[in-house]
Length: 606
Image (cartoon, rainbow, N blue to C red; front, side, top):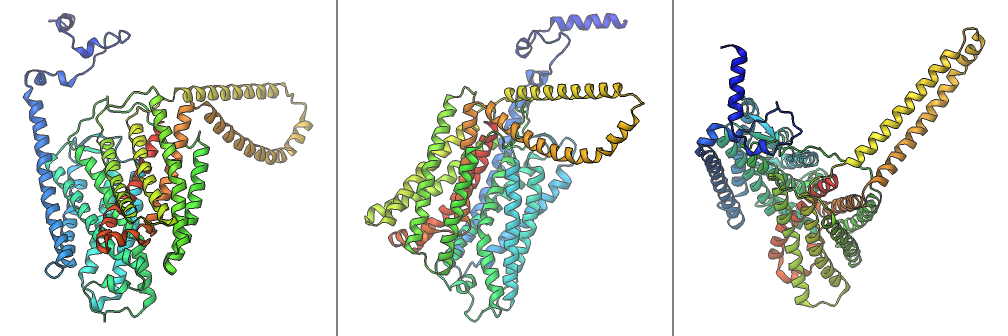
């Protein structure tokens, strides 16, 4: 049979085939010869629906198995840590360090195997989640990882100075942790977007093992954070608290070096807890993306970029809040490190919060109202990163909200008639309201479709067209002047060559002024052409970003008036209030840091 006959038969068969619902919904303007491949319409999926069911069942079974592995490892680690707290004779801190060192070595071995083995297999990474591993999240991993490495260096230095009464485990444990931090930071920086398609079960188990190791490290850091708060609040007891079960004869001969190591260790300690929590969130997204197939509907058409154009009042007010907050923080820290903080310092500290928190709450409420007024569709596409962001924002806010409610109960029950206690009560109530309003604003903004910047593209096109037309006119005029110039005017040409150097110097200054003017005009142009709703959302988002940064800095670097004011500690008791603060304060610090990432997402998509 000749080729035209075969082509006619295939055309007749194609005409007799019944089109699917995807082809029916295709626009009429599409060419007749084009065809779309629908993988779900293959004969294997049409006639053997059990293939899809078995695939889903295998995925659920793999997630269940890895989850059971993580649960057993967490329970084992919690049993060790609890035994160390309640019975430090049978289970010591060195035993917990040995267990965690074994887990970290296993995690490093799996990361190396993933980089050299799993990912290099054919068709290992066919898809990447564009929402996972944003730049600021990966940058925070590098930042906190660097500080955590420096923290372990201080730990090694302090143990090396007191080597005569320190065990070798106190040097080996931070050394292994440095290796673990480096491997994990490299892994998350380069491969946090991977949707691995091979070795599903082994990859899930490796990710879950790494998640549980970070959780146990965070739990150990939270339980040991009591030591460092006592160092800040009870002066001159550093050696006794850090020594643990050691005898008082274990003293440092060079007190200056030991004090540097101790202060550096205390200052950098919160970064280690933040690093563990960030790594857990990113690894969980990777665990959800194992075996995930991203279709063309999940791929964003327009990739939004962070631009600082179009905002004026948000950065201005936020910068003012940061400057005032740093001044308040420095005054508080100067008095807290020298002696017990005075009554006036507490009043100043809580007054700053009482002024800033209502502004943040009002901004979040206005932003939520603008979201309701906008006619933007909700983003209903399955997104593990966004789901995790919502869970983390809600869960981390519970730490600060819980501490605030404990403070409210203590103040109302004791009924103190003092300005400071009234400020603490107002601070607790405003903090609860601010957390709730900010969560609503961020979660609502994350579920909105990104704004299609058609107006910006149109204005940019007009600007480019006008610039190209002006360039064409200038070239035409220069050509005309060149053609009109006759060769007999040699003297004029020599004079012009003599003035060229002077003209070039003048043009360099003029070009610099034109560039500055062009940048300022483009900034004003972009600001004026933004929709008022988008402009307001960007102003509010950027203001809240800067406010959350200063509210993250103040408790992270040592300002803990929630313990040092003495009210809640007297009401609940020393150990009970320390336990509440140890679990609530790291979550509140993580909430501020995670809110910055969510607000940046809202700013970019506004």
